[in-house]
Image (cartoon, rainbow, N blue to C red):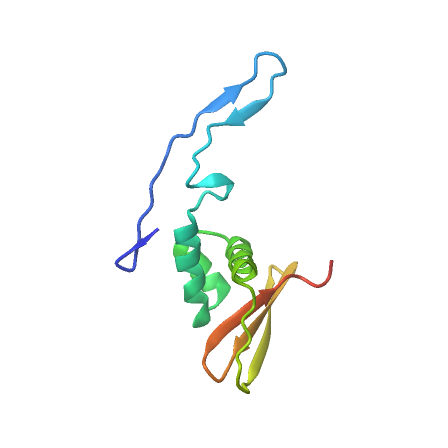
Length: 124
């Protein structure tokens, strides 16, 4: 989580449970965090920083992987829907590769210097 432009983290001890009948092991659920191990607020704050820095630099600053940041950015842009400007603008299209495996394409309004959206890897 971000507070006054500083990273604030909370370390939790999550309990594991084992089913006596089938042996299935599952973890205690923490509703506000979920399976992503970060809050929605943290992910939004991290994604806001990619407009002027690389995915890798922002990910390293926040202690997450570049792929996690890409997934968060894609999720946020899908929830909001791509909002194309009404007026004519210069479109920037940039491909970002992570370890040569995963690819994400960003669409940017170069006229207003803001992110329009992130497209998923088209190779699959």
